Amino acid sequence: SKSTTMTQSTPTTTTDVDNPAHPLYRHRRTVVDFEYGPVLGEGSYSTVLVGKDKKTGKHYAVKKLDKAHIVKNDKVKYVMIERDALSKMNHPGIVRLYWTFKDNRSLYYVLDLARNGELYTYIRRLAPFDMNTAQFYAAEILLAIEHIHSRGVIHRDIKPENILLDDNLHIKITDFGSAKIIPPDSASKKSDDSEDGNAGRSRSFVGTAEYVSPELLRSEPTLQEADLWALGCVIYQMHAGRSPFKAATDYLIFQKIKNRDLAFPEDFPEVAKDIVEKLLVLEPSARLGSEATGGIEALKQHPYFEGVDWETVWESQAPPLK
Ligand code: ATP
Image (cartoon, rainbow, N blue to C red; front, side, top):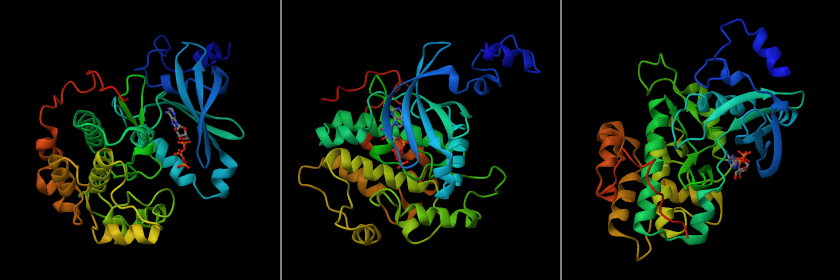
């Protein structure tokens, strides 16, 4: 078989190459190693399908990206960033990238399958979430963000559409196409951002404008704190059923964000209001959870998260979403 051939041609010791910990393990899959099932969804440059690994029977989400379409639309950079950022991640709250491969037409990313779709759908259907449910998802999102930042990455597009849910209704954050990878040798995280300034700016005109941070609208470099702004938007949305800066046009949304034109529904829980007000702060360094305010550790101490056992969140039973 093809895989036997590959194993034999591998120059290193091959005995444990089927062990996921082996450095070559992830390079050892190709298009024909999967049986493809139903389409899970379509993106602008991609189709996501269920893929069954013929070797193990395990199911994945296989994201198939059309090469010609990507090149034609000048998206090569985003596709590479998505791959590079995802491959740095190793966390239960983040979609894992297992293998990448290609054929003549397409690139393929083999990812964790998140069978329960987007948090967005559940917010639309069920919001306002009860306190317990909203707290659980906020805690998982915060832990995932903490991991992303610890790996030197800023996600920059956290929103309910990019928060997927697995079989057990735990989160898997996806879509790292807008991410920024902080160079490991940069003396300060706040240093040179020039290379990415345009990328950041142009991103604000694709997708949804509602979660864009005010610093990005001011054309300042976006730092880790941009993901905290987005967390504030998601918490608001779980309790209110709509995003905080909604308006008829992107222009009006941007005006609202820049002016922090923020209003809460009457029945919005007080403790949720307090954390949202501390996250949706125009100045990034003054946002609760910023380095200057004590980092993510300080955010975890907010009364909103009272009772959360941070060590066992991923093993715990998710609240029923219905
Ligand atoms: P765009 O590229 O236009 O921003 P997108 O980010 O939604 O769109 P994809 O990442 O290709 O594009 O995802 C397409 C759809 O497939 C999504 O709507 C999502 O619901 C579904 N999907 C993506 N990844 C997974 C996954 N790992 N598990 C289950 N479903 C997924």
